Length: 246
Image 1: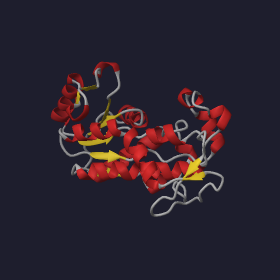
Image 2 (image 1 turned 90 degrees about the vertical axis):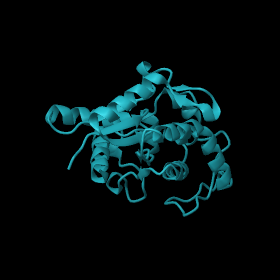
Image 3 (image 1 turned 30 degrees about the vertical axis):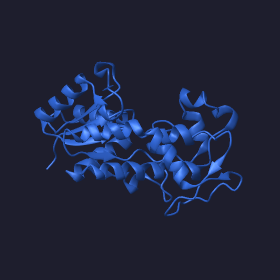
Image 4 (image 1 turned 60 degrees about the horizontal axis):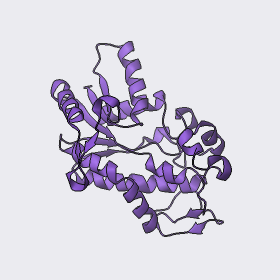
């Protein structure tokens, strides 16, 4: 039986929010999917404190508690999920690549400097430290399902055409898009780190459904909202995947 859903996160909830709006307009009496974007003005400050004492701000805490208490929803997370793009979407000044444990669909860039997977993992863990704190704080409200971030697009030209200002300010025009294989490997390693953290909290992890990916695991082009996010159709597929886990 369908039930209400609450998804808490940042930019990746936009696709879910768009799909939820269409659902609500099409069938107002059906269970609702609601989202909380923790970086919106109404929730500032999102986080308070430093280090292990970091907590969600009071407005955010009150809103999450209210939504959980009033609607008894399936509780989900779309926390973080874009740092891997921050370090891997644009070709690095000193191109690198790495062997991913378990393999990957595309070969390494032979022109790039090979570096250990452990070094890449350390960089990711440092970069997503705040996201890992967010997951720990979210688990204090109860068990949740964490939604894996979208896999990368394969097409360099499509990425370059849709990339936002953040990437244009970091050398996209001069160095171009990083090789697809590297982008996929860093996304996959990032997902492993997030999954380990989620499951250590006693929560569940929702991988991107296979129907949304091509044979090698890249995001299907018609599901892209821009260079790094999914669109409304992608969000609808995620809602359906969450409903299947209810």
